[in-house]
Length: 181
Image (cartoon, rainbow, N blue to C red; front, side, top):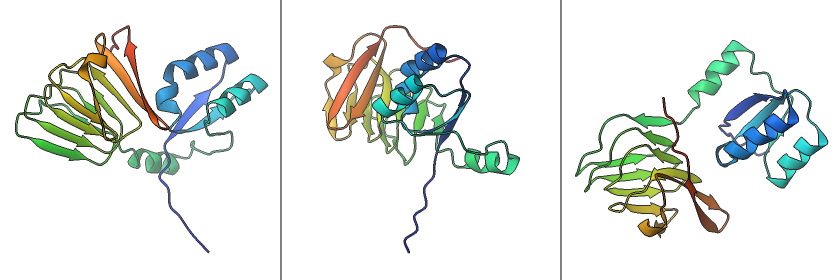
């Protein structure tokens, strides 16, 4: 017998309308495709086809209404948040997903094994091995994503979504700045 243990992150989504659901999925697919999706409501053939086409795992049979189960799921969340300026000389290593709400100064180094979102200016070095990054245009930054240095000239507008898709890195500018509050 072989036994493996996995930590699974789950999004519970109630489908009220197929079109609203598919619009929501398209808008959030970069993040959601890395989670188990727990669906409630009618799962139409179009929704099934969407999940199959985008290689997204979903289930309709999961009991997250149990309070004890909810607490266990919350304990497994690996998102870390840094709400202070990362100063020159600091070398921060994070084994999970990371949200940085403040500036990363020149001379600072950030190493992240999970996904990364930085909401302020980056002047230091970032090494990210996750599936996606969301970063501002940062001409002074050194950004290495899954072992590949990202040329700052490829970063457009205010925010950029950088994803790892199989063997290629895709950089997409976000035309509209996200609202964080």
